[in-house]
Image 1: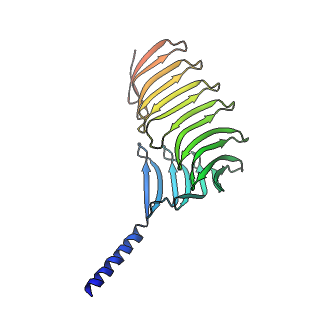
Image 2: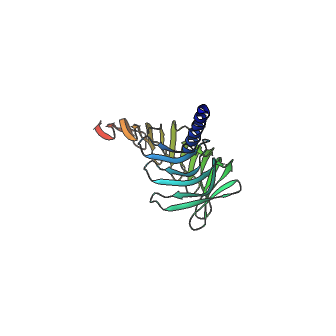
Image 3: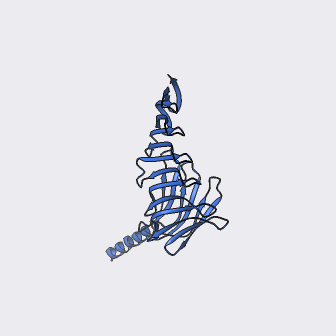
Length: 238
């Protein structure tokens, strides 16, 4: 009899433990310690409930609602001032975002309730202004924004594992303006180009700041200055 009571007590504890662990709050952070994402996982390990995504500067970017690992209505995007910029509605196998004035901001296909493929962005008059790649709801592939004349404004490589990244910006005629390759800690190199396409500057960056030697050139390719930086501060020029 005592054995049966003991088994029953253990069973009750197990049930209580399962109920207690039904949901778990998860948080992800940027290298600068700012919150990146805050969401809830069910006991089955599926995203459920409210999912908040933040920019690297700490401002709120998006709030979405999940059910059993699938996106559901409505998804709200925010601008840098904290105002609602667009609201996403699921229509069949598409997630379509609309601005407050009713114009279409972007659209992306859904597979098993997750963003997959290219998200297409539209300007106020309906023209295509950019694309962003997704794989199983994670940014993946590339991000490209276009100028009004449809030349690339900037291109960024998107990696699912947040490893090495490439970011390029362009002048209005499509010529390369800047090129940056960096890792998840914002370490790497930055290159700037003159409007005629020649190299203007090249230097190393550590944690987003100039560090080491930086070289400066004229638009004719002549080296005019070398500067030494440390943690963003100018040490010397020669």
